[in-house]
Length: 499
Image (cartoon, rainbow, N blue to C red):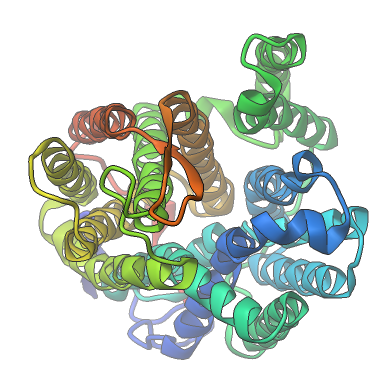
C-alpha cells in the first residue's frame, strides 16, 4: 500500500502490521490522551507565575530564595527530557510516559501540602520531571499512528505546549484568586493522575524496546553540563554576569561538555549518539530550534509586562494578571489551529519549508510589535491580541515541523532520544532568551509615579525595541537555517511507521 511520508513523498508499507492490525486504523483516543497529557505538563511551566510575588510571604522565605521555584523546574525538566527519551527507547515509551505523569502527580501533592520553602522546591523539581512527556508522546505517535495521519497528530502534540502555556496563566490566576494556592496544586495532581490513567488505558506499548545498558556516566555528565549552562543563564542577572560564580559555571560548562563529548564518542551505546547529532539535518534543525525557542520566550516576557504596566508609564495598559493573561490566551488557541496547517504544509512542501514559514510568521509578529512601539500611536489591548495571535501562528507551524524533520533523519529506535535532544534545544533557547531579554529590560528600567502617588518601575520603550530587534534576528536565523536543511532526504528503510 502506498502512503504519504512526512516529507510528502510516497513510500510503501505492508498491508498489515506484524500484529495483523490494519495500518489505516487511527488511534484517535490515544492521540487525544497524549495531547491532554502534554497540556498538563505545559501548565507546570506557567502556573507558578501569579504566585511569585506572594511566595516569600506564603513560604516565609526570602524573595531571592523563592525565585528557585522557577529555576529548579527548568533544570530538572531540561535534564530529564533527553534522558527520558533515551530510557523510553530502551525500556518502553509508554512506561516512561506513565512515570512522567507520576512524577508530576507526586510533585503537585508535595507542593499542595507545603508550608515551607524546601519541600515546595522538591515538589517543583518533581513537577519538572514530567517535561519529557511531549517529546516521548511524539515518539510514541511515530510508532502507533498511520503515516498519512502522523503529521497532523505530531503537530497537535507539539501545539499542546503552547495551549498549556497560554491557559496556565489565567487558570492559575483564577484558582489562586478565588480559591487558594494549595487548591491550584491539588488541581494539577488530579489532572496528572487522569493523564497517567488515560495513557495506561489507551496508549499501546509501541514497539519492542531496544534494551541495552544505560549510560549512567553519560547521564551524570549531561546533567552537569546542563546545570552549568542553565543555572548561570537563569541566575546571572541576580548574581551578576561578571561574578566569579557565574563565570566559573560557564567555564565548567565548556570543560565538562568537551570531556563528555569525547567520552560519548568512544562508547558503543552512548546516552546520546553524538555522530547522529552532528549530521547536517539534525544539527541544523536543533540550532534552528534554539533560535525559535529564543523568539518564543521573548514574547512570554514582553507583552505581559506591557499589559500590567500602569497607564502612567509609556505604553502601559494597567491590567491585572488575570485580565492580561486572558488577552494573551488566543496565542495558544491559534497555535493549536496552525499546527494542523503545518501538517498540510509539510505534506505538500516538506517540513523544512514549514519551519521556515513558521519563523517568518514569528518575524512578522515582531515586526508589527516594533512598528507599533516606535510609532506615534498608543499601544492597545487589541493590538496585543493580534501580536499574540501572530506569535501563536508562527509557533504552531514551526514547532510542528521540528519533530517531522528529526523523525526523517533518525532510525525508529532513536526517535525518543532524538526528539528529547531537540526538545532540550528549545529549552536552551528559552533559557537564553530569559537571560538576554531579561538583562536588556532590566538595564532599561525607568521609574515614575501614578496619579494616586504610588511609584512604579518599568522597562523603557528602547528596552522593548532592543529586545524585540534581537528576537527578530533570531527569527531570521531560524528561517535561513531551515532552508539550509537538505530538501531531498531519503527515508530510511527502517523508518516505516507501524501499529
